[in-house]
Image 1 (spheres, rainbow, N blue to C red):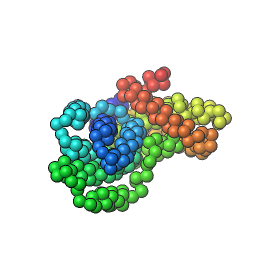
Image 2 (cartoon, helix red, strand yellow):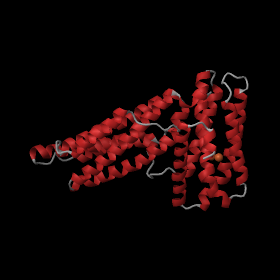
Image 3 (cartoon, rainbow, N blue to C red):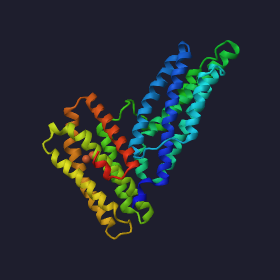
Image 4 (cartoon, rainbow, N blue to C red):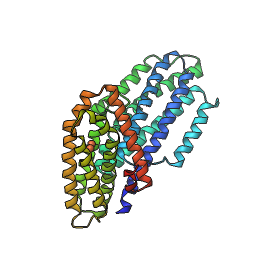
Length: 348
Ligand SMILES: [Fe+2]
Ligand SMILES: [Fe+2]
């Protein structure tokens, strides 16, 4: 089953997410350029947008790690980023025109995020689970578009007439954002730039549950192969990242940690054994069921024993640092997995 780890549809989503990350970086640098050029009343609005864009870059990086496949953006996106960057730095455009370009970029980012959601619905429930935090980014990008439209109107009128636009402009903008918030509902609750460590671990645990259900519920060998490829890399990388970052940190507070290490190694070995099988092998699903039970029992112990330790023995800042380190370890392992096979991961 060596060809399983890089299903083409899944790689295409990874490429789209990498494109969003490149564009998000551009949005941040344009925010900064405009912030330097804008006057009093518009500055606080743009300052807030910049802060949200920076937070969303961090959430986007988390989404990519949760998704589990690292990729490069398409060449066309990188080209676009370069072109727009120099256009924004030049004096060829008026300020209103620059804000107009910025709004177009925001539009592109919003649409990419929405399209990724639609693709995820077609590819698998595990993909939907991994990219859930994109809802926050999409909502805020839509809200930013409304703000930017207000700025374009104000600056455009001012540049051409020397006067301010009619009263009530910002009230209209706020109404439009409130209407969007009504549609987005409870999906828009992220304010911190780092998703808490327990939430990150839970997201991984439930993504694994979804993948097991997808594998056991499918009769299509190709789909099974695709889901197993994702499960194999997700669970192996999650376990190794826990061994690198989480378990050593919690060890002083938890006497049964050697057991937890053994369970993790055991699960990774079981997955390696299954990797050698063909999905049509009569033992395939029975072995998947065995590893599912082993993972669930390990995860239950982790959530019951280790989660309270994280909550009680670590400060908010320490938990945030653990989340950052866990995410970085996973990203590095994902990059290695893309380049090598799993055997080489264990020896690093
Ligand atoms: Fe875990
Ligand atoms: Fe674990």
